Amino acid sequence: MCLAIPARVESIDPSNAMAQVSLDGVRKEISLALVDDVAVGDYVLIHVGYALNKISEEEAQQTLELFAEAGLLGAVN
Amino acid sequence: MKYIDEFRRRDLALKLAGAIAAEVEPSRRYNLMEFCGGHTHAIFRYGVQDLMPGNVRFVHGPGCPVCVLPIARIDNAIELVERQGVILCTYADMLRVPASGRRSLMKARAGGGDVRMVYSTQDALRIARDNPGRQVVFFAIGFETTTPPTAVAIQQAQAEGLTNFSVFCNHVLTPPAIRAILETPREPDRGALAIDGILGPSHVSTVIGSRPYEPFAEAFGIPIVIAGFEPLDVMQSVRLLIRQLNQGRHAVENEYTRAVTRDGNPKAQALVAEVLELRETFEWRGLGWLPNSALRIKDSFADFDTERRFELTPSPEQDVKGCECPAILRGAKRPTDCKLFGKACTPENPMGACMVSSEGSCAAYWTYGRFRGESAA
View 1 (tube, rainbow over the protein chains, first blue to last red):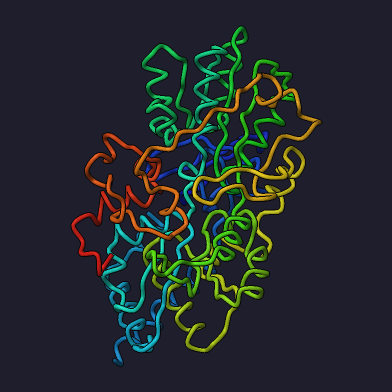
View 2 (view 1 turned 90 degrees about the vertical axis):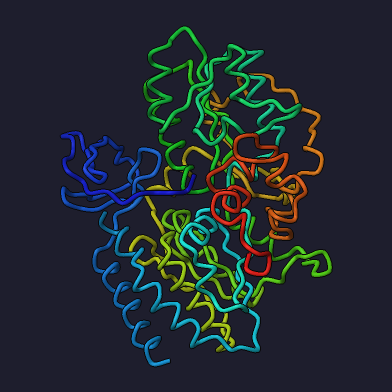
C-alpha cells in the first residue's frame, strides 16, 4: 500500500492539476495536487495516482557513491 | 527503470554485504525491526537476509495497513454494501481480507454487492459523478503515504458539491505504532526478539519527514535509519544501524535522501490537516487501542463522512481461531510459528490479513521464504 514508483513527467496540463508520466514506457495520468514546482523531465514518486514527491537526482547520486565506497571497504576484507 | 535498476545491482549488493560483514562485531547482537511490510518483502524477495552475517536478524514490524485494520471495520464495510446498498470503492488489497464469519468484500461482491476496485481516489470520485442516484463510499485505509490523496478527494467532493460521495476513514499514523512497539515489553521466553535498531518507513517519511522519529531515538535510546524500499537501500541502512550500534549512538539517520527530507512534504501535510483530525483512540490489530493513532474527518467536512452519514453497527468481532496475525504484527512471532501457516492459510485461501496483503509478513514468507530453515529466517 505504501509502495510508490519513480516516473518521469512527460507533460503537464495547462491547469497544472494533472500530469502525464511515463512508467517504463507506459503512459499514465496522475494528479499533481500534493506537489509544487514540478517541471517536465522531473522524476516523481507515484502513489495511488498522485505524485508524492520529487526525486532528487543529486541525492540519488550521492547515495550511489556511498554504495561504491562500501565496495572499497568490503574489498579490503 | 531509472531510480530502480541501479538500486538493485547485484555487484553492489555483494560489496555492501562485504562491508557489513567487515563492520559487525561478532559478539554483538543486531536485531533490526523493519517497520514496513514493503521492507519485509524487499528483504525476502531479494534474499537480503542471506547476505547478512548470522548475528544480524530482521524482526518484522506492523507496517502493513491492510493487516492492522481490525476485522470490525471490514465488517462495517461489508455492512455498507449489503445493508445500505452503497457502491463501495476500495484499493485492491482489501478485497480478500477475511472478515467475521469467513466473509470478505470479494464474497460480498460475489453475492451481488457493488464493490469496485479502484487505483486512485480520483477513480472513486469519477464513479460518484457517474452514478448520481447511488451512494458511493470510498473505503479509505493506509498510513500517512495514502492519506493525502484521501484528503484531496474529500476537498474536491465538497468543491464540486458531490453529495452522493463519502469516505469511510480508517487512516492510521506511524509514530504511535512505533511508540507502542517500543513501549511493549518484549517476551524473549515466548520468542519475541528484543529490538536493537529500526529501519524506518520509506514513503510514509516522504510525507511526514524524518523529524517525527527523533523523540523515539532519544527516549528509547534506539537508532533509527529511514530506508528506501530497494534492496541496496535496505542493506546500506542496515550498515548505518550497525555502525551506530557499534559506536553506541542512537540517532535518526536518513538513507533515503533522494525522496525524504527532515520536514517531509509540507503541502501534503497541510492538505491532511485541513480535512482530517486526530481520533482520541483507534483499534489496531495486534497492537490494541492506541491513543491519537488515527484520523477522522473534521466537522467542516462532516457531509462526506461515511460514519456520520450511515448508522454502522459495532460488530462482535471474531478473530480467526489459531491465527497468529496479532503476534506477528508485533514482531513477537514469525509466520512459521503459526500453526495455520502454509496449511489452512495460504494466499489462495487466506485465514488472516498477513497472508493476503502484498505487504504482509506471511505473504512474504509464503512467496519467497517458506522453504528457508528457521535459523536463517
